[in-house]
Amino acid sequence: MKTLDYQWQTKQQLTELLCDLVKIPSITHTVEEIKFAEYIESKIRKLPYFQVNPEYVKVHKTKDQRKFVTALVKSEKNVQDTIILVSHFDVVGVDDYGSLKELAFHPVNLTKFIYENKTKVPEAVQKDIREGDWLFGRGTMDMKCGLALHMSIIEEACNGNYDGNILLLTVCDEEVNSVGMREAVSVLLEMSKQYNLKYNACINSEPVFSRYPGDENNYLYLGSLGKILAGFLCYGKETHVGEPFSGLNANYMASELTRELEFNTDYCEKVGDEVTPPPTVLIQKDLKNEYNVQISHRSVNLFNLFLMEKSIDEIVEQLSQTANKVAKKIENHYSKSSIQFSTLEGSHNNKDISVTTLRFEELLRYALETYGEKKVMQIKEDVLKNKGQKDDRELAIEWVDRLATLCKELAPMIIIFFAPPYYPPVNSRKHPEINRVVDYILTFAKQNYDIELKKQNYFAGISDLSYTGLSHPTSSIKSLTSNMPNWNHGYTIPFDALEELNLPVLNLGPIGRDAHKWTERLDLNYAFHILRNLLSVTIKQFFQK
Image 1 (spheres, rainbow, N blue to C red):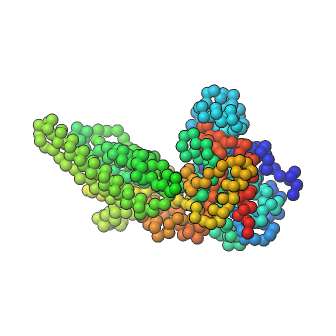
Image 2: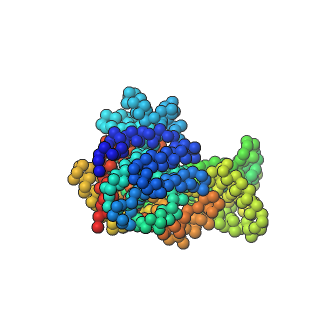
Image 3: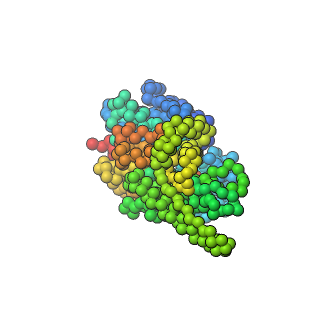
């Protein structure tokens, strides 16, 4: 090996590579996201190893015509042992940059501007600028730095520096639905058979996420949080605003659900000293299409729930209990207010109301039994015609809304359902080989760099590691799939393939700050010196016999 042969190894080389990657504005669902995959393929193909072995670099198309890339370097020792390096190359949008939007994908210029105007940025940013060497820009930390590091490892592997095989996998769409990683699962299984590979572990290099404001710990993760999107379709009763007690406002129903679920720590899970964040509402809206003086009688909430070890059945039961509790609150408040109003009016014509709660699968069953399969299937076909114009969340909501409208005699009602995406929780804290390697790396980092890496069970930002295996058997997922309206209609997860893949996982990534904010930045000194070396040492440990 000759050092002069390398182009992605030094801090300067890696910084230049990262800046080149960031300059491509690969926002999810844009043309540039597709172009980025093609760019990575062309860069990797220029390495001498792949000019001799061109079949080991492949661009794979997803069902929606986007792309992801694999690059395999086989060891000269002709072994099965293989480490997968996974990353994503899509990024979120840049509207948060405001007047600096034009600089978001030009990290050198943006960094220069921020350093020159450091007194105008938040104090936490000023502190970092004073103490380190930081690069600003969309995707610098999340997660094109991880991809740059993996490309560096691949280049090193091409020169025979590892006793096993290295497989780079970089995918689209992690920021929205993880289409790339979900479709890559079958590719990984096919490659293991085609090239006689045994996957020792899957290493992701998502950046370190702070657990609390001001957290400067450096974490190493043995897994990744799960995520589920829980929906409530509230169907009240229509009435004129002048006769509110003749109906029930769905916006009020949805508001009571938000009051009950937002920050509700009963939904938090604790494993060791790690706790999932409480639920938070991501979408809350009424479903009226225009203004008039009819009350809103259809409304929807979607809540983000993080998962560690809870089963889907447990989640469904907890959501049902919450819906029942809220239904009772609504009934009591309605009755009390009706009595107070009738007393004021002198009519003594107070009213009561009953709110039904049911799961989507129960609503669907009722609709089929009452209105027949032909009617229900016609509604489904009408909804699915909008696929491509509406995203998966909107399609799920429309499907539940149309079905609830068909069965409006059940109203007022709260319907529990799930919308995409679903990220299964994944964790390797009980895997002996992962624990052996992690313990070695913790000691190595302390002895060689005086760095305290803190072991965490779950990466808190959700990641594509969720699609490397299953913590619960496939049979336990039925409560999810039967209550997700668009399951197998444009959205699916290859659960059987995930059970077969079943990879041990590890996330060892760079130190960054402010993911998805205009102050997103990367600690260059750590990323392209210490972390780069730690990744090599980690991989070599996996190949130790």
